[in-house]
Image 1 (tube, rainbow over the protein chains, first blue to last red):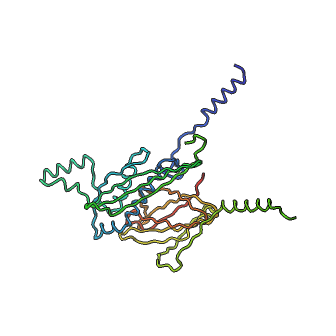
Image 2: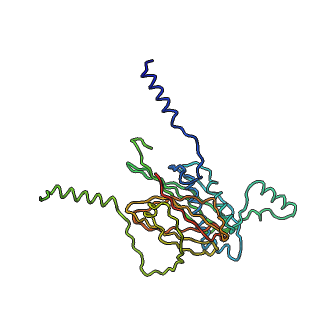
Image 3: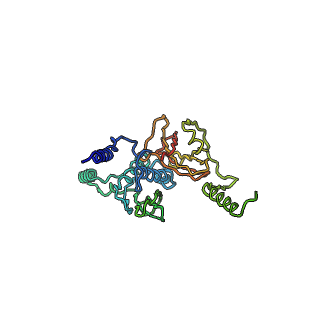
Length: 191
Length: 141
């Protein structure tokens, strides 16, 4: 192998392994976080936060909580109809936490431990377990996705639509939050 | 020297292109306002004069919702002739000055068109939140 080949191989090796850096901690969902074309933590926080803020200021919630009442709320299904695969609890759990910490709602737990404990208590006291699982309000929603493209640009809009329904199956509150992202398509096959 | 027709056309085209690239937002609103917002005084610490000159917080007003939570309206204006993208963070504090946090608190990326005015409305995480702090940070591409 001549000298030129050796130098070339060494340079390629340096290029291949010389660019990596040690991982660093960043502010979660902060300004240094990666902005992807999908749904990031910042998007989830913004969508969930916007929904909760609108809910806490809504006349429907004011009516439900008037006179010091603390209505109970159960998290229903939030359907992810977007093409992205992510844990829906990233949205649902954050909304639930904010509503719980607002002091305006009581949240009904659905975990197996709480359900079983409630069943045992009801058995001992001879009461109905069904009462414990009844909420005054149910939160449900949907995450959707729209895509638009032209010759040079690709755009995606993620829509978070959340509804608060009462026991009479009336929707008393609804909030839609859109998050749009755009990027260049790049080369001829740039997707 | 009398300019030729080609020169005149070239100048007109270039001017049109230049003007088109810097389109700004025109705003019209009712002059006699029905609303009487509670405008509040603010204290500012400016460390990025560039951002401060480009995006201004023109007014802060508050209200209390029927649920007891404080509502805040932040009115922003893009003072520059170009679209501006920046990050905004809102922190809430209770009556004792202690931070009231939320799992959904975080930087929010905002893009404003040239000379656009926009009102952003926020609600406090719970009725104990009484004070706030707004942080603005320019987006570094």
